Image (tube, rainbow, N blue to C red):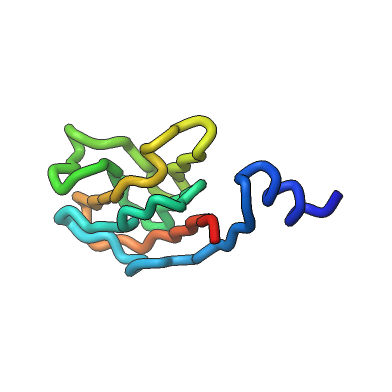
Length: 110
């Protein structure tokens, strides 16, 4: 069975992926890195910078109110089956140490 067919059955319809759907730069203030999308089934954020970063679900994300995404390849992933509605929410990130390059991918149902 082809991967496309398996994914179509798993997520009840065809899907497509988008790389860096928003700016790949995370600032020292809260940066929206994923917009709210009700048809998102997976998202992935990879911190490519030399600064630790943090992810959260509102503009108050910080080093004390966020999920740590370590520097140099640390990642954060949400998957519909495991994380429920969180995968559809807006996601914000912050890089307190300085402006940072991240890599973002999302998978959405068509």
